[in-house]
Length: 130
Image (tube, rainbow, N blue to C red; front, side):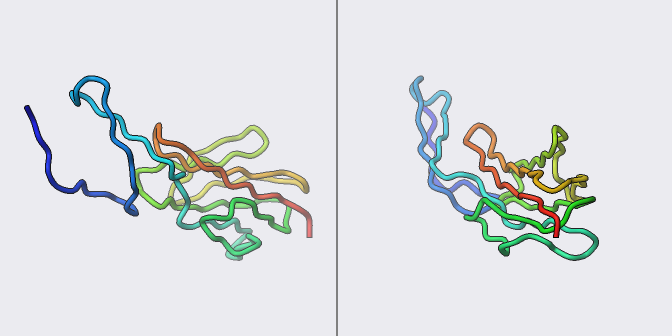
């Protein structure tokens, strides 16, 4: 019999999870009702962040008043989460260098943050001409 007593270390914010097993705890499964979120999000043309309203992790819909070449930068609440941006059929993982898209009025950029098999959360950015 093996017993664990103590705390697990996390790379992000603390999260309540449910641990369950169907084989007398030889293996365990974690489940969570908390969606993964972004810590930062910006959409820019040059050095200006165009995102409106200002980013808040619990707000998932934004606009930018610009068409043309835009860069998307994002960081997740935990560095174990993955982030993908997509627009017009093009999809790329977001890293420190960001992701660039060419957009026209009415296009959407979707930014999805994923916590493995525990869930995902998608942010939408609508592009409009200024």
